[in-house]
Structure formats: C-alpha cells, structure tokens
Length: 442
Image (cartoon, one colour):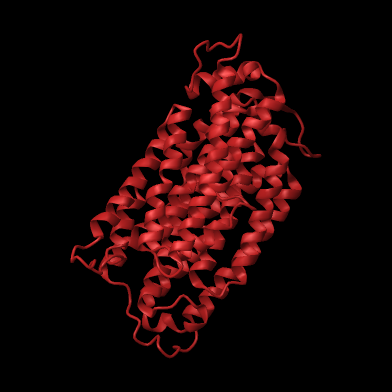
C-alpha cells in the first residue's frame, strides 16, 4: 500500500511510446500494477486456503504481461521463465490443497463436509495433527513449501529471478521483489508453520541449510556481476535467505526479525533499484564498467544511492540492520553454526555494495557520464520517503515490532514451539516462562 503509489510515480515515463494505432499503453501498464497490488492484498488477508491459492496463482498473469509487454531486451524469455517456474510450483501446491481438503473429509474428521477454512484447520492441526499419518502431513507440507520456495525464491529455486528483474522495468522489478515475492515468505509463516507444525519442525534443519546456502550464494554472485541491475537482483536472493532462515529457526526473535525484514527489504530494495533505474535510463547501459565519477555530476543521486546501498548491507542506524540482527540472534540460539555462516554474508555485502559504489560513483568522470543529470523533483519525491523510512525504522522500529510481536507470539503458541532457555556459566536462577515462549529470572 505504501510502495505502489511511489512506484507509479517512479514509472511515470516507463511507457511513453505510442502504439502503431496512436493509443498509448500507459493505462494498461498502470492497470496491471494495480491488479497485482489488489491480488497481493487478497492473498495477505484470505482466511480460506482455496481462495489464497487462487489469488496466489492469479497474480502471475498480470506480472507476466508487465515483464513481457513492457520490459527491455530479453523480456519475452524472462517472462516465460518466470511464468513456468511459478506455475509449476503452483501446480504442486494445488495437489497439496486438494490433499488437505481430502484430509478434512476423511472418516472421523471434525469436518464431515470438508472445509478450506484456515482457522478451523489450524485449530484441528494444533490439537491432534488432523488425525492422519505423519507421512501424509509431510507430503502436504512439501507441496505447500515447494510453491512458496519458488515464489520467495529460496535456493536452488531462484534461477528465474535475476533474468526477470533485469528484463523488467525498474518499477516492475521492485513490484516483483519487494511485494509479490513476499507472498511466498508470508505464506511460509502463515500456512506451512500453522497448518503443518510437526512437519515444519521435521524439515526445519533442511530448510535452514538451504537458506544459509542462499544467503552466501546470493552475496558471492552479487560480487561477481558486471550488470548493475543483475547485481541488485542477486542481493535479494541473499536477503530472502535471511528471511527464510529466521522463519524456520522457530524462535520468537527469528520470526519477528523475518517479518520486520520483509518490510525493511521492500523499502531498501525499492530505494536501491529505483535509483539505479534512474541512472540507467540516463546513461542507457547497465554495464558497471561504463560508469564512474557520477557523484561529481549528480551528487543527490549518488547520495541516495549510497544510503540505499548501506541499508542493503545492514549498516547500523538503517532499518535492515535491526531485522537482520534479530534473525541472526534468533537463529543462533537454536542453530549456532548456521548463524555463524550466515554472518559471513555481512562481510560479503560490504564488498559488493562498497565496491559497486566505488566503481559507479567515485573517481574521475568517465566519458559519456558528463551529461548525466541529477534527480528531478518527481524522482526526489519518490526516493525521499524511502530514505526517510530507512532512517526512522533504523532508529525506532518499535511501531512495526509492536504489530509483529503479538502475531509471532500467536504463531509460536499455535505450533507449540518455545525459545531455547539461555545456557552458560552466568545463567543462574533461570526459570522457563512457557507463556512468554522464553524465560524470566527468578
């Protein structure tokens, strides 16, 4: 709701060429963005599993046309790859949705007529595991998780993202990475954990391992990129690894950090990708080597790019730091090795962000960059709220955490998980407080 108006303002000139008939396609472009937003809203608020599935899949259609109809070179291939990957994941999920319904209509079920009501199924699952074999529940969990892992995306199901992000317009890319892909991580919290709590705990070590690989893999590949937009796309793969890591660490701090990370990543990625898009539209190339000395001719653009980049590497004082810190702390209490490995991504992030800024913005003005103009008032109006949000949430995340924490507490209660009790030579007189999913001193 916050990002879409800014994206419409940022994409003011994305579609300016008239069609052969003389009619502009701007109204189609705007309509598709609004359709995507509405479908994401329904996905976030649906309390019916089948309704969620319908809109989870339907949002692929307008996204396909946004990428394939309005993107740059390679857009057709990228749009088809995006659609095929996500449709395949959706088909697996459809089988799981049908299987879940069959489970609710079995003999002895509390739902003799069957149900897709999320609240009723969760209530039953939290008491007796729906009364079916663990193998069946594991299969249903994997069906849901596969679709969400493709959407998120989780390594190794990520390969559609870099191509789609670079082929689409910057506005569409931000819509996809900052908003649409969050439906996948949101659904892991809402559906995977609460519908299948025992299966989630069973597969958590595997998913945590894949998430850690994604964190490091995305950061390493970002360092090696020569394409500006592709580099930013790979940073998102690393960040989605952090989000999924916090979810399946199954601690209150980890899940609160993941939910907050979904918000903060949307803001930081939007700022970085949009500023990079403004720069590319002026210079006409995404090749990093073509830039240099931009801060001398466009200081405001360079400054906003730096702040957004520092947010991406989770600099203290900017919003992503709080969420990443919570994820790592929450993960360390249950999976210390995974948390230590994931922490290495902080160093890698500093490399790809600072090296990128050095190559693009500093040094002498490269030939062809002297005519790059600074941000115009419309573009400042887009970037300024994002930078302000990064700073405010970096120093004062309490308003968002006050909303997140009760929801996380409810999820932890539903899946019957509790924070590990502190251990160590200095922890004395400690008593577990199961109601608060943690502990309190005597």
